[in-house]
Length: 431
Image (cartoon, rainbow, N blue to C red; front, side):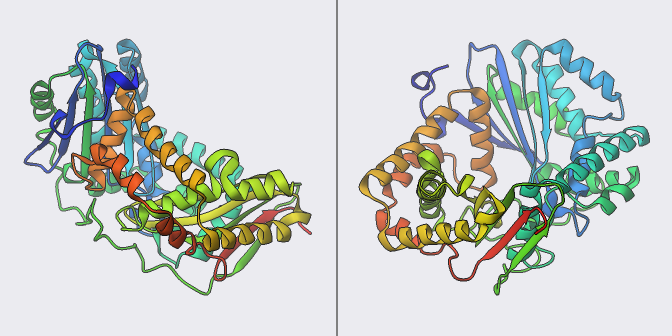
């Protein structure tokens, strides 16, 4: 499907419905393709772990390991028979269910997805298997210098209890102690229709899709009350308090390694912050565009200090990390840090060149066009749009939003990159 064939999704092409249970549904009709893409977000990510890092991921990993009506093998066989896909992807703020199926199998596919979402059984034998997989993954991660540096950075840059301070892979003690009853209780508490957004894009009529969803999910109403957390909007504050100051340095020694990985930076902004677009463009120019932006060009290409080097900012309902990352020879750590900071200060002082600004704007606008070439890409874009309450006309407005960001605004955003008060985590071989 070409970009020209798809075009920008206009507000009038998006059919939005709200079931009495609070389930939000967005549908886009793309007749003739014979396929339907599903993208579902439920606010059940790791920020709701309640001090037990890894719990939300454990629950998400169990969704396809057996339901009240079918075993894990039976679910897999049903998907195979339909030639369909369904993936469960745990995240910080939401868990994603994404996949696609043939239009002729739409009813059966929707039923299977609904079963996975609403009726996992958490069979003890499957819990034991997933526990083993997660513990093995954690053991591997703990010997990975990139992961170790990121984990330490999160502890430095965010206060205790903050969602972003948690280890992204969870904690061994939590995973070892989790049992079926506790996993089921988390599912009951967080997997609720009022916390869920469901997107369908493809060869299915909106009213027909809504009828099927009402029949399949209209009765989904878990007992008890949820925790009342908002799922979208700028009013949601950071869990566990505001990001901290007085940041410091931490070094982690991992025997048997030859490379050091470093993470340097601080805290970005939330997705709904007025400075979001300027910061994203500043980050793109500073550390992602072309050969990983100005930082990559300086640190890797010109000075030859790093195997890789880039800058990234993560913004969701919560303000996430804004960091520069690099993999280096341990002897080059201090010089690499100096070079990154020098380049960040220079960019904040000079701002973007005209060509950098044009290239960055073109990249972001063009990336959206490419993303919208597929049903799955459209569904994911609509889910993000709804999750952050951006409005049904957001995709139409997006190019103008990006092109309206000025060089001065980008320069002002770049000046906020932590160059004096920053967190620095380094993981590598012992001295």
